Length: 152
Image 1 (cartoon, rainbow, N blue to C red):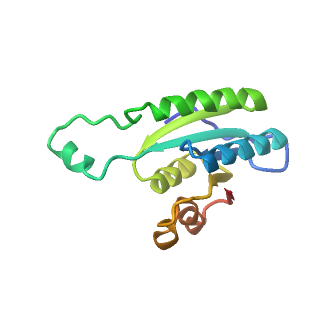
Image 2: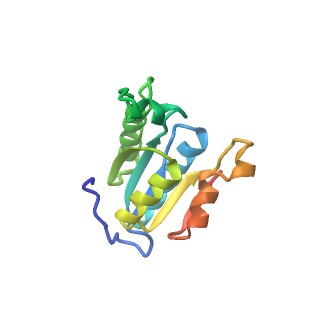
Image 3: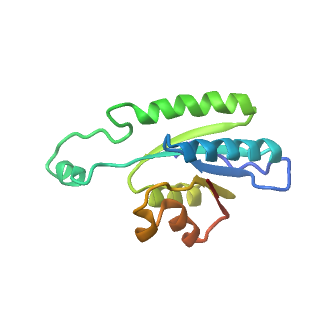
């Protein structure tokens, strides 16, 4: 597990804020909003990217294929990490960047629980299909473990 430790902060708000990023416009807005909140509250910021596997990756792995999961073919995780660290410097906020692989909701919940974060921030989904099956944001709100802020 990463070296993220709970921080009581200097304000009345959360000590550790987890923000999920995926490179989308709404996740960039969510990261900026979370960084501003962290700065105002004296909180630590934990930025998280969850790499998802193609639908047949599980089958390929079961037969011994080597499929990288920490970054896509275009290096999404690495690029986001660079952007997160550059943005955090502008906000003067302590930040850590975590990459996981799997279902975004499952991984966000796992890390948030393990590190006892005080708040979760995500960008609103822009995909029409999420109205039927539920977006990451809706599924996190339903988990009901911490306050969830959804940034449009």
